[in-house]
Image: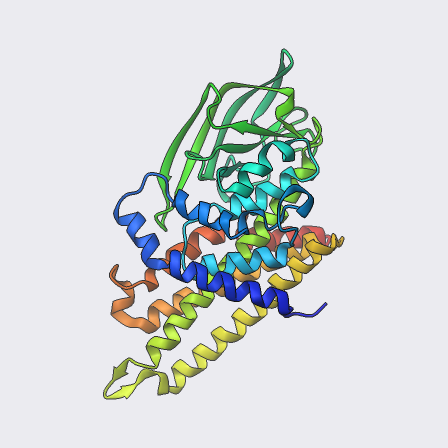
Length: 375
């Protein structure tokens, strides 16, 4: 498999680069933050994504989508990351779509996602650090289920039209089996959301389910067999978050290289200082290695390869580390102005911190890989 984009993917890259840079640059995010926007993203921009066809990128052509793959979704996400664009693309058009594929819920929710009218949230985590523990219960009630428990760190959870919920229908909190996924509408009785701003000014909610009743049609896939769609969701989300991290790290690096080419110290451009050149070269190398890991994970996912899960964890860990290096070096090389709110580089550090935690940080995935290898 080549570790580069083909001609069609390059055309898509050019298209999305221009679109996002024009409609959702960093200034767009800054304006939402300064206005204390309660939604956290622009619904109008989401509709524009739909008009361009991006919201259906992973949905088959037979269902009205573009029928493309994770490589193409990653091309879009990298530009979202590069511009720090607040968007439900990752949770909705990538992770949620993958969970819904091949289930009875696809027919219900895909048209709204394709049209840019539906936003999805992922109610998976219940504890810190993305621990793989699901204690929330789904008890049978009449012809459906009653959901009881709480979820945290749910991006767009307070505004989503669809909430994908992982709940336990059998076994204990730490068991791999006995999980069922549910598609819960936003207006379900007994569901409450408490949204809080994260470090990067985005919004994530704590969702409380107080005996939320759903009918049997809300089940995604089969009862007690939610691990398969949940794993699809997580693989897609982790790979997508890795692609977005690449954009954040790449955007910060490019901004810093540009700054080094114009900032003078003692009458000399700081980009001519050999020590800074060495650090910039090291950063570039780390970002390129991470880029290769991400593209490999995307290609293996598209092939349905049995090594895809391992590649996804490698990509998430490596992009978290490389992008953390990028934003830290960038703020330091900018000097004092890098610590101010008036300059954009600090926003990249904040976004990187949130994305690094999303779907598991570098330590989580390193541990996951070690366990899989028998350690």
